[in-house]
Amino acid sequence: MKAASGNFNSTGFPASYPNDASKAWIIDSGARVELTFNVFSLQSCRDCSCDYVEVRDGPSLVSPLIGRYCGNRTEPIRVVSSDAYLFVYFKTDSSASERGFNARYAQTTSKCLSLMFILPFHFKAMKAVCCYRFKVLMGERACPRLEESKTAIST
Image (cartoon, rainbow, N blue to C red; front, top):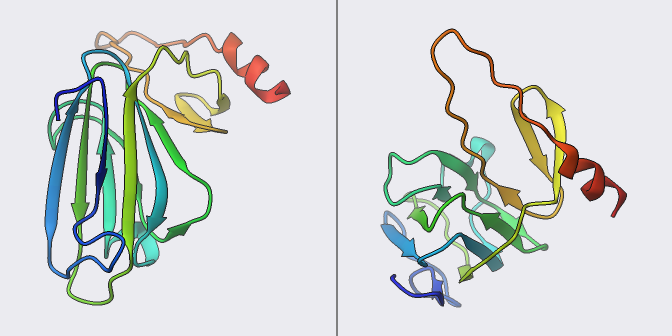
């Protein structure tokens, strides 16, 4: 999908999605992109190994994983890319199915102020999942600066 913004759904939405199916979407917004799953109802299982949606920071299945999502979510799921591309992959197994999902994407200038520092090199999102890329040479250390997280925690 090559557009500044748009919408997409799981197959059959708002009715149940089919079993043993897979579908992929490549989002190319031309700038950083924010993806929001407004409705999200998938089969729930441990480790999201049955029916799931994967979101990757880049244009392919081998791009860095931002998250794997399953189950029923009452709050919207928000993801912000580090660049102009997101890869969304929806996979179902042969057992139960649910309503699926409805998603919207749009270009953003978000600075991802909703991050909270948990452990070295691990971030937890409070309102959105934001992807940061670090390039580190072999034998070097990465020390990300997280001043933005102080603002996010107080809001």
